[in-house]
Length: 306
Picture 1 (tube, rainbow, N blue to C red):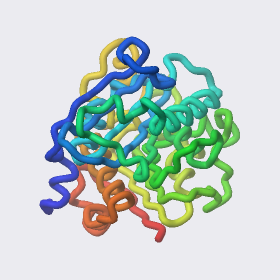
Picture 2 (spheres, rainbow, N blue to C red; picture 1 turned 90 degrees about the vertical axis):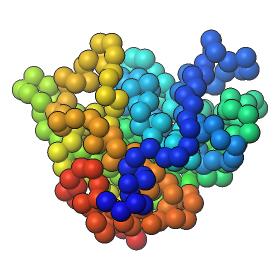
Picture 3 (cartoon, rainbow, N blue to C red; picture 1 turned 60 degrees about the vertical axis):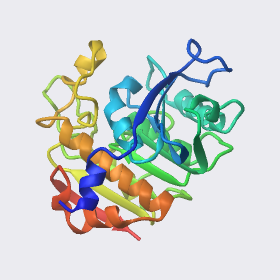
């Protein structure tokens, strides 16, 4: 590997603090939903990434991924959008919009961070995994209005329902190529095993017709696309996810051999994309495109729309 990409796929130089913010922990008016915030502790101003969790997952299941991204100089805000949810995702999209507005409110995000750490909300990115990826696209597409604008959008194995023609409400995919009316660059990350059933009892976690390839097909330039060949839909979660939901995350989807490589890849390519789109430094992103072997996973597809 080159030193550039050793850096992004490994931990960065920033010391990171994980903060939990909610009704029981905040001395100020609390955010609309409980938050897990991964923030650098070194004095400075940092871009912000709003990260939306997957279906029936806890935001804490992504702690290692959030810390990875934050260690490279980003503040990552991960709300717990719901505990239980039905097929309609309208309310979580509205909640994500409310959290977006809260970021710049008073007291808002600034008052929740370590002293001398400042969020740069003019460099605000949005990401989501699985159903959270669908919600992220919906929010970026204006399904719920926000006062802040997103400068970059990332879909991590996004899923829009059970199958084409069986999308969850509100449907995001239109099946019209390059039809997404987005004002920001997009990256879509896919898992090669997401559309594979674990067994006959459970459907695939990222079924054909509503998964990453369909989302990318509707993105217009600038956009990029990476598919990790032998990795599963939940392989970017923490190595240890506790409780019944944590145990279920090992049983419901077709998984790769280990979570570490996919989590390192997702963390590294997210950092590379954010550096390129928020900070104007595309060296890492271009290096991964030009030499896929430097990634910690095998990439079966890479595509850039310029």
